[in-house]
Length: 383
Image (tube, rainbow, N blue to C red; front, top):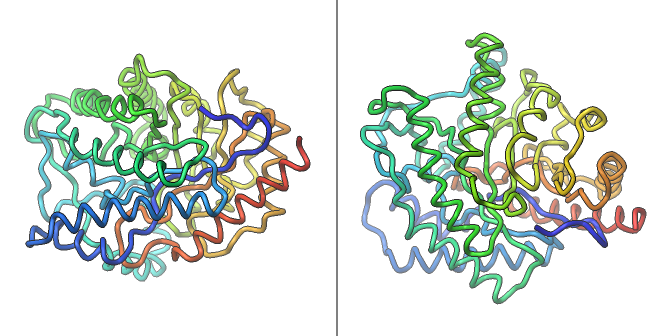
């Protein structure tokens, strides 16, 4: 894993807006209608090539495929795990969203309308048989597309995102939900290994840790028990994978709302740091959490580990000023050491394949350029 040895490196979290021609084909594919399979594959390959080139041109050091092949960071796993089936009409709202919607119903009445532009509605998969990994061809294609793109536009390093094992699903097969999630973790291990064996970093996308700790329908003891079990499942599935090939990303989800029910980061960090990863990515630009740099005065970062604080918001169209980004980088560098900080973003910019992504792509590229400039300014001050 690259470190900020000579200068501050920059990266982001993963998802980027898919081009409209690809979205058109995705929509037909997801609705089970006829579509041109060769054209679809070619569109994905070209989209990966384009986003890798644009990330490098924007000045990012550690890049990814933009999740061009995925309809959603949540639902893509339905197609890669055997034993799951999608049932129309099933849906599940995370507890943090429920709390927000209850308090701000007028805001969310308009907010949810944006999802009408997604290529397909989200549904909750149902487990009806033993969970197995069936995504070998899909992950191999992701790897090949990223390798091809990097062959044309080299970067310092590259990663591929993968979901954590706490997927939202209904269990109708295993005796307990714990058994079900253990099976999911073991199946996902095959995807993680494929990514690492290909020479890329694997990023575990995991908003679920925070959701578990937020769930006030459980007692405090049960919330912590659930979080501990979740970490144990992840680490068991990571066995044998070098920590310096793993990035852990946790966040407060995709909710671009008031966020008054966000859990303090101080409650999250002790669990996050238990994951056997080499780098930890988390929200900072979110104004509900900008003050929480103080958490790192009390939580020691192990030798060899890295922090990837998010200095770009995924929830606003403001382009952060490079000076502000540089100030943030300096703050974290003084806390954990400049070589242990990589400048990142709070979350992805198109968590679902949609004609109306969370932030317009023209703004996203401007944000990435600002992040790169902020990293350069911080490097001038720190090195």
